Image (cartoon, rainbow, N blue to C red):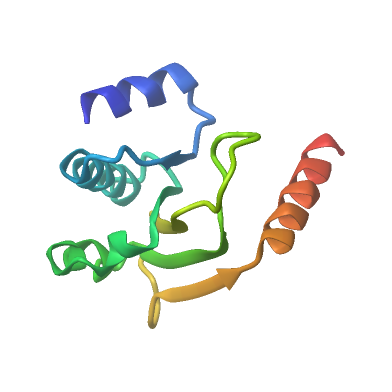
Length: 132
């Protein structure tokens, strides 16, 4: 948690979100997410998003992370990411973004599925808005 707080301080007062991929060590990953959730719920950030293999959300020991009012939902990437450019073979894992925010959710959490083209289009649109 101290490293996250230090990173936020270094990023400055305008940093309102943390978006990250996760380490493969599930104990470390769960500890990081608990810290991200705490930062969102304390109002230090507006939202946090963490990328995990799809199955990460299926562990019953993590249910408390998904039943919190701050849990907005899961965005499932309906393609398998290729992490090493030019690598051969079929990528092995599918991934999801898990999102928490600093406001309490009303109703059920979201489960959204996107294809690669939709994700690319959204990224391009966001980049264009920032440039304008």
